[in-house]
Length: 131
Image (cartoon, rainbow, N blue to C red; front, side, top):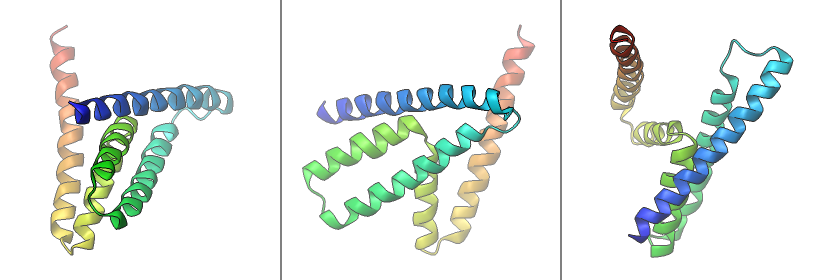
C-alpha cells in the first residue's frame, strides 16, 4: 500500500507541474506569437528526460535499498511519469542502445510512435463519426 501511495502522490505532483508549465507556456506563447509549434510539450519532454537521466544515474551507485526503491517509485514512476511518460520512453531506449540492442530500440521507437499516432487518429475517427 505504501508503494501505491508513493506513486499516486508523485504522479499527481508531476501532473500538476506539467499543467502549471503548460498554462505558463500558453500565456508566454500567445504573447510572443509562438502558437504553431508545441514548444512547451517539447520542453517538458526534454526536461523530463534529462531529469530521468540524472535520477537514474544518481541512484545507480547506491545499491538496491528500500529507501532507494521508494525514491525511485516516487520520483521516476510517480513525479516524472505524471510530468511526462516520454522520460521513461527515452530511458528505456537509452538502456537498449547501451546494451547494443539497436534494432530493438529502433523497433520500440517505430512501434511506439506509429501505433501511438495511429491510436490517436483511430480514437478521433471513432468518436467523430459517432457524433
